[in-house]
Image 1: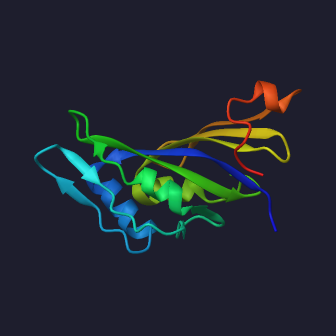
Image 2 (image 1 turned 180 degrees about the horizontal axis):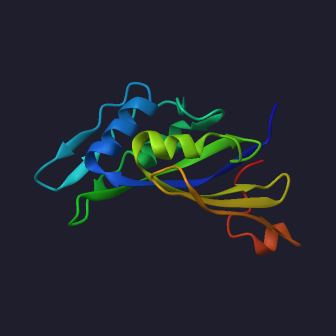
Length: 152
């Protein structure tokens, strides 16, 4: 059984691209746009689910409930969907560059692995180009890490 590198990942893009991403990646999701509040509602089913395009990454029941909050769009029609995702071992090699390019989304995240005492921070542009990847190692993980109980 792998260790899990867990943390928040943000997906930024247009309403159409976010809707396509949510509907395609989360089985049974049916995102809707609320015109009155200019807000996208993900409507992801409340069960643990693996993301279809990533290799070994999933969202738990509790985290899906948090991810179903409305996504407000800015004046340019761009919104940010945020989800807490668990990755087997690490975020490296999960397929984020391909995911970014496939849905034309900017992706940014920071994930933690308390068993191995590290955090990975990453960012991809909507064309799949990586603009940030940094591994944070700690002398005293429990004290120095901002989320020392995530992952494991």
